[in-house]
Length: 262
Image 1 (cartoon, rainbow, N blue to C red):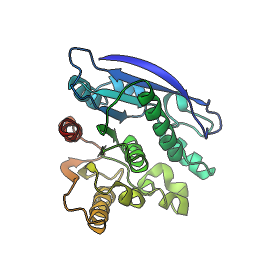
Image 2: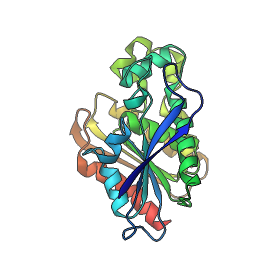
Image 3: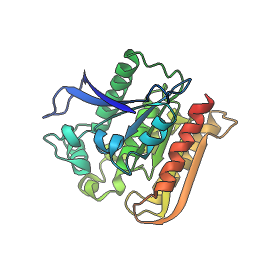
C-alpha cells in the first residue's frame, strides 16, 4: 500500500483551528488492487494511528491487503487539530461547554473528505464503509448516520453516551450532552450493516449503554419494516475498557465481507 496525503478546505472551524484538513489516503498496490475496490474510512485519535500504528491500523492492514482504499484524518481536538479547547476527550467536553459541537465538525469534515477522495477518481460505488474504536467509534457511527453513501460501520468498544465518561462529569446533566447519545441516530442507521462490539464489564464507556444502543437500532429496524437483520452485536468476556485484537479483526472483517459481496 502507498500512502499519500491531501489537504482540503473545511467550514465551521472551531476557535484556534486552521481552516484546512489533512487527509491520509491508502492506495493498494496495482498487483493487489481488487477488481471492484471499495473504500474504508478508518479512525483512531490521529490519522497516523489509524494508518500505520499497531494495533490501531488493523483495519487499514486488512482492507488494503484485500485491495481496497483506506482514508483517515485526525479527530477534532487530536493531533494537528488540538485547539483552544484542549486535547482529547477533555477538549471535546470543553468545546461542548462553550457551545461548540466537535462532532458536527467531524461529520462535516468526513463528508468533505469523502467528496474530495471521490473527486480524485476513486469509484467505490456502494462499497464505502467506516470504523473506529472507542471515541473514534462514536465518530464513525455518527458519520455513517449522517452520510447514506456509507453502507456499513463498525464501532469497536464505542462511546455511545458521553455522560458515562469522567471528562464530561461537569456537564453531564446538560441537555446538549444527553442529545449526543447515539440512540438518537438509530433510525438513520436502520437497514445498514452495523457491527457493535464491547467488553462485558466496560466501566469506561458503559457496556449497558452500548448494548442499549444496539437494542434501539433493532427497534428502529423493526419500526421501518426491515425483514433482514444487518446488526451484529458482540459482547465479549473482557473487563475494563479493552477490546482484543481478534475482536477488532472480527469487526473489520464483518465490513470486508459486506464490501466483497457488494
